[in-house]
Image (cartoon, rainbow, N blue to C red; front, side, top):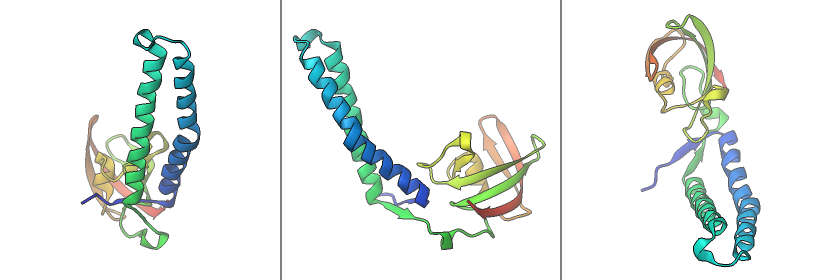
Length: 158
């Protein structure tokens, strides 16, 4: 049985856009690179051909991966995003007691995560600690840089 992935509308769009790009643009680019490499002749010493074939394999593997993901996706609707407890689709403002600073995170699925944009996976150390927590709760997140103590100040829809 395949694992059902819960994503936001934004996450679904990101996946479908990537799949469309790979199928319509990247495939053509790789096919052209193979065609050009073949024109160089002897394949036994043709590094351009080897690189293009490797790239083709990566593109095709990613296309299959995305198609499988999209078969097993469940979109979380706005009605399912609750502000009484943190979960996927929620924006959580916390006070980091360990570092003495306020920060806001959006909790998303692992395929939507982008730590630089403060979109953290529900399976990441901080995301996992926040899921289910309510305003006023203090949670501890065991991160690679140490344990963080986070007080939940506000929960809203992302």
